[in-house]
Length: 71
Image (cartoon, rainbow, N blue to C red):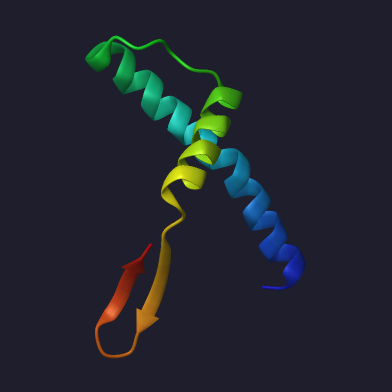
């Protein structure tokens, strides 16, 4: 996959992940925690805020132990 293909995949993920987060939030949080539903751009900003506060997890592959999740 060339650099153009990687850029397209990243662009798709940038728009797909917040939509998935918004759907999960709106299916769960209003009923369980009595929180309001959120819109797409609110989900987008919440994911940015969470990545700034908690960092981004990185998956690295070690030859002896298999995949390791590092934060």
